[in-house]
Length: 97
Image 1 (tube, rainbow, N blue to C red):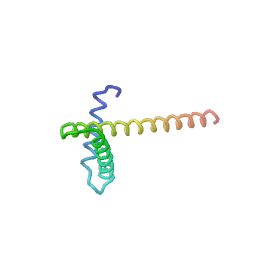
Image 2 (image 1 turned 120 degrees about the vertical axis):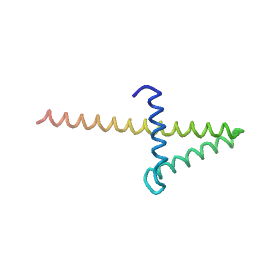
Image 3 (image 1 turned 180 degrees about the vertical axis):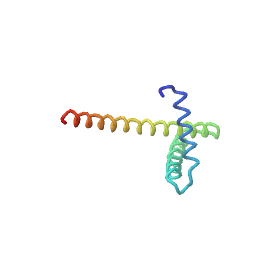
Image 4 (image 1 turned 30 degrees about the vertical axis):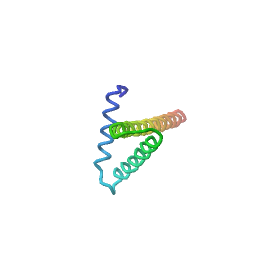
């Protein structure tokens, strides 16, 4: 799981999974929200720097990958924290019993 190419493949798979969702579903809403975030970030950079179409498409792809990667890292970190707290709680309860 720590292999970067595997992480990139997972991120691309998550992006494609979100994109395949219906616009009214939770996946579609998440995709639309991320799409607006990416568009606003690329628009912000376009306002500061002279960005042509080729660079804009690379920026869009890069920000999609970066945002989904960061979201996955955040989710995994929160999951690790919750699991460790649950294990500590269960371990404390069994020691008292």
